[in-house]
Amino acid sequence: MAAIRILLGFFCFAFVGSSWGFDRNRVADGGAKIIIETAKKEIGVREAGENAGTRVDQYNAYVGLKKVPWCASFVSWCFGQAGYSQPRTAWSPSLFPTDRIAKNPVAGMVLGIYFEHLKRVGHCGIVERVHNDLVYSIEGNTNVNGSREGDAVCRRMRHVRSIHRFANWTKKGDRK
Image (cartoon, rainbow, N blue to C red):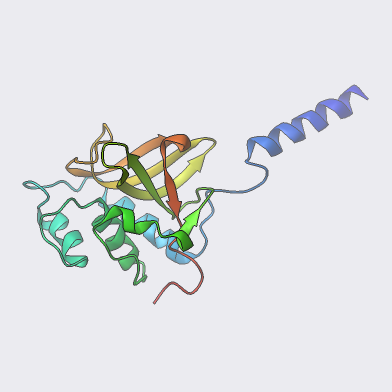
């Protein structure tokens, strides 16, 4: 009887520890995988001047702008490389329309960080993977300290409670 309780306890612990059986690192489709792989290849890209540089200029050109803060441009560019026509913006708040909001983060989603002094989402990135309460992301226009006015594409680790919103831009039918 004790052995059965131990096994049952182990099973329950493993099930609860895996977010109730929901794999938050699965990707919804091949497009989400391409988004993440594209973002990974950009890690280490740095500005050459303020909001400028060969690659940074490409991110901003994708959304039709020059020399603007580029976290949302980076996200949009990655989605474009994966065959999505949307999102296509340099304005991070516009990445979170009501019909795209998601409660639970999943690899391939967009994350938004809220800044009280701005009274809005002021930074964004791409969810690479989720482990327990930690969200691993790839973000443009940041740095190792997590600034929203950084100078590089970096991998970040954030607690899920520090993230204001998640948006799913990889719904079925979204790809070109």
